[in-house]
Amino acid sequence: MVKVISIANQKGGVGKTTTSVNLSACLAHLGKKVLLVDIDPQGNATSGIGIEKADVNQCVYNVLVDDVEAKSVIISTAIPNFDIIPATIQLAGAEIELVPTISREVRLKRALDTVKGNYDYILIDCPPSLGLLTLNSLTASDSIIIPVQCEYYALEGLSQLLSTVRLVQKHLNKNLAIEGVLLTMLDARTNLGIQVIEEVKKYFQDRVYKSIIPRNVRLSEAPSHGKPIITYDPKSRGAEVYLELAKEVIDNG
Ligand code: ADP
Ligand code: MG
Image (tube, rainbow, N blue to C red):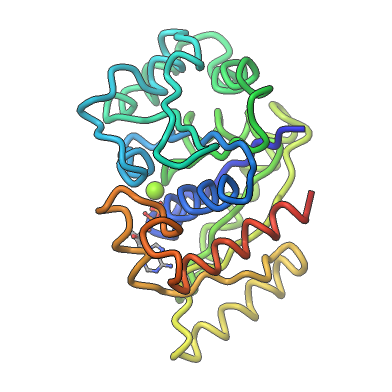
C-alpha cells in the first residue's frame, strides 16, 4: 500500500526540503519506490536532486492548473527507484490562479491518485505557508511529517499548523494523521538543543522521531551538487541519520 506524506511547516528554513530530498533518497536506497512532489515555487527540492529548472517544460503547476496528467510530468532522478514531479517558479501563480477554480483543494489528490499504484511512498515538499498549495498537499496525504528546528521558539507557529490539520480533517480529508515530528539542525554543543528536545517531546510525546537530525555541513553542501546526502557523502553523519529516519518511517508502517 502506498503512503502519501506531506513534509510541512509554514515556517521557512526548518529543514522541510532537506528532509523531503534525503528521506526520499534513503527510502529509495532501502528498495522502496518513491515519488517526490515539489510544490514549493522556489523549486529547491527540484534543483537539490539535480534537475535543471530551465530544462523543465511542464511542472506541478500544469498538473494543478491546466489538468495535465501527473504521469506526463514525472521525471526519474539519478537514483534508482526515485522519481520527482518538479516545480518551477511558474508555480508561484498557482496560489492565486486556483482560487476561483472548482474543487481547488483536491486537485493534487486527484492527480496523484492516477499514479499512486506505481509507488510505495509519495512525499510532498510543501512551501512555507498554509495557503492553497499546502492545503492541496494535506488533502492528498495520508499523513504529515513536521520538521521542527532545534532553536528558540521551536514550538511557535505549531498550534496554527495543527489547527490547519484539524480543519483539513474536518472538511477535506478525515484520514489525515500526524506521521511524526522530526527535530532538525540540532547543535549538540549547546544546552539549548537539549531544552528544545525536551519541550517538543513534552508536547508531542511519542510522535517525535528517535532519529534527530544534527547540524551537518555536508547536508547543507549537498544541494549545490544536485545530490542527496547518501550519494554526496554516504559516510557523513547526515547520511547515517537520514537513513535511520527512513528505517523508522518504514517500521512505523
Ligand atoms: P525549508 O525547506 O524548511 O525552508 P531547508 O531544508 O531548505 O528548509 O533548510 C534551510 C537551510 O538550512 C538550507 O540552506 C539547508 O541546506 C540548511 N540545512 C537544512 N538542514 C540542515 C542540517 N541538518 N545541517 C545543516 N544545514 C541544514
Ligand atoms: Mg523548502
